[in-house]
Amino acid sequence: MRRGQRSTFISSIRLAGLGVLAVLLLAACSGAQQAPSAELQAALQRGVNLGDWWTDSAGASVIRSAHHPTADDYAQIRTLGFGHVRVPVSSRRLAEGASGRFSATSIAALRADLAAIIDAGLAVIVALQMNDAQKLALFDDAGAGDAFARDWTLLADSLASLPADRLVLELLNEPTTEDAEAWQALQRKTLAAVRKAAPRNTVMLTGAHYADLEDLERLRPVDDRNVIYSFHFYTPHNFTHQGASWGWAMWSLLSDLPYPVEAQAMADALDAVPKPARDHVRQYGRESWDKAALSAELSRARLWADKHDVLIHCTEFGAIKTAPPASRARWLADVRTVLEDNQAGWTVWDWSGRFAVATDSEPQRTVPPPLRQAFGLP
View 1 (tube, rainbow, N blue to C red):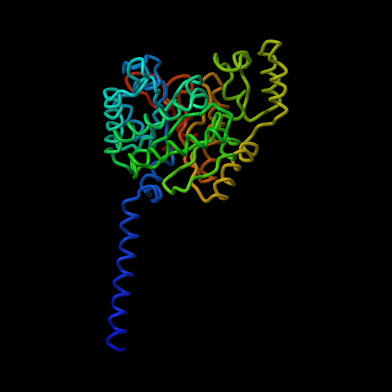
View 2 (cartoon, rainbow, N blue to C red):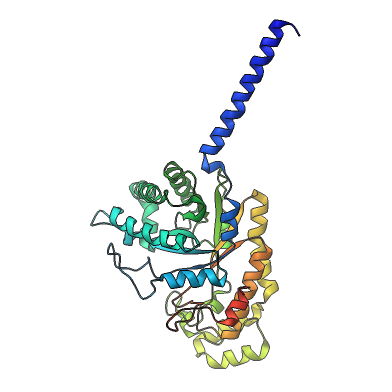
């Protein structure tokens, strides 16, 4: 090799080396381009929601409700075999005064609670919650959408010092709007704002409306590997919400609906409900819900994930405590196993409250044996 050629060759190697180094440095600095860590993905395999805690309607005052978990709860949740919890957080609990903007004091209180969960050995998904009117206003007023992104920037910046491989940021629980395009635009805009403040954190994105499977299927994934796509599953609602005092008025009239559907149990349920509810009971019977039917539904999430090569997670599934106990345990078991068969992490709704999987017994809440078995816990 001639001297000039050798010099050119060495220079080329140096340039190539600098190029590789630049790529490696960029990858290291850009958490948005890193997939969620193996440790975080393992922790997200099974978890439980801590609802009715930071979603209390008391505005900006950070109070401790009857559903406030304790250090003993965190230890019990970890001992049972759950790897994470999800904490829905009301924007009103973070707001300050008439402006409605997030308060540094309230965010600090939230951060302390999240830190305590992480210190207990659990990962945590923090999910922003708003009431329906607030959520719909995000799309009626461009200023409200801008403020939403700014609030998330403040929140993400305040939480970014917590371990990134133990904290997931979920931008909005059940966006409510049926305008999938409008929600996608706002979600992408908010993600970009969050990425500037918390580049290393995994972010959960969801479909519009109530984050059901059809909403997930309408969602276009973003160019960000550090994202997990979430959905909710309460199908069939007449079973999971039987006896509910909110939502559709007919639910309050339903009772004793079995799962899986079985002829004699359906006849007993038909006799137990008032006349206005009987057609709905008959329809539930005709739908013949069982594990195969649930699997057919939930396989849609896997098909969508495979098409886009992304991670998926069911952030809510559950059945009300007023459902027949054996049927409830069977439904929870079937949904859990089908989710796992479809490589979807899951977070059951809820630790306490109307869908509680834990007992209210003192001195320590725990999950009773039939439900432990349903969740595949030791």
